Length: 101
Image 1 (cartoon, rainbow, N blue to C red):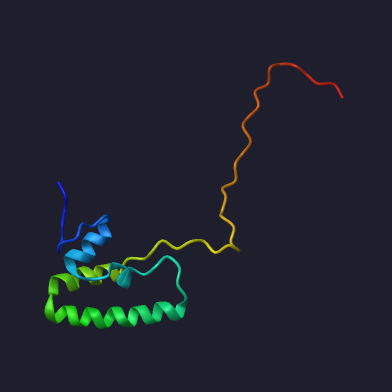
Image 2: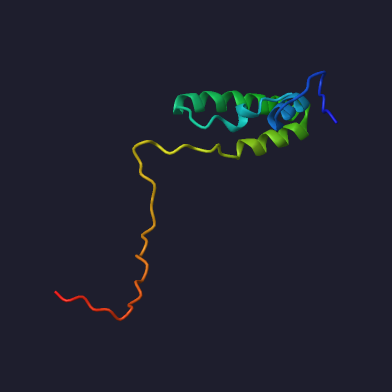
């Protein structure tokens, strides 16, 4: 069964949401990597769209607000190393043989 929204066939879940609700999900969630200035500009636009949605479509506005509270997956900065847990060496079983020095 195909899902067609507004005469278009969405490929991903985000495309379906964008077509069905008429909002750009990434406007509210943000890309994985963006500068502070880009983030501030995106959030300003998102707040304006949200204010308009509250007046015209409260249910969609509620969903958009929930998207604002989600955080995108942040990639690790290249300068930071991953934290590794210390591993103990496996215990070596003694078979009774001795090594002379």
